[in-house]
Length: 223
Image (cartoon, rainbow, N blue to C red; front, top):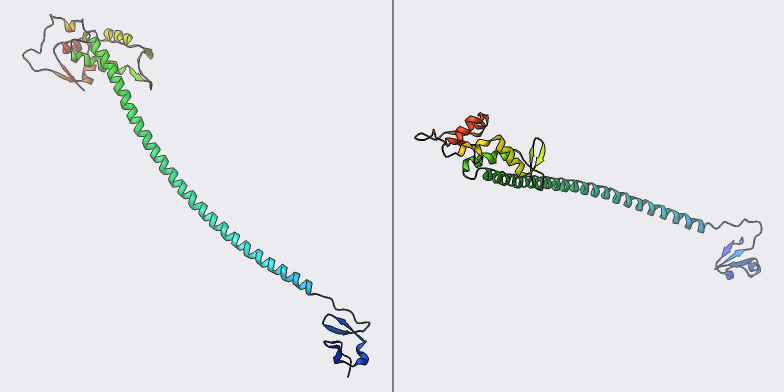
């Protein structure tokens, strides 16, 4: 029987050849010269398995990250769309409020102009409400609102209310108190007849003398 290369129990072989074996771990290996030792590849196999596991884990992580990226892009797109809608709604509401404010401001400014114009008309024609109303209408044509107060412009230059009253008294003397329009000797052609009425445009187109006569006769000017 030939010699075994490795045995588990040294007592399994003949005592005469036991000295030919050497113990390596739990086995007894035959002492033979010239046989190349086998390379221990167990550590290499472990390293290869480790690298394979790491590569597998890296792929899994990359897939998770890609999924998260896609979800984030989708979420961002949705947020942008929602923000755009909210922004457009806010702009529409702001425009509506601006329009309401402008309309309200215009009404307030026009009211201020009317008050200032009626003040001038009443001052120039204290004795006749009709003439005062006509003068107030003329005064309003010279009035502007600069956002803070009412101002009057004559010939493109800003003037105060006194200067405007002087201008109106020269332009329409027949409407101002103390003119022939309010004289005690003035006769009325409307006596015994129907009161005449003209709209503002027709009155403005009349000659100055006819305007004076119309007012003297108690004519009514309608808007």
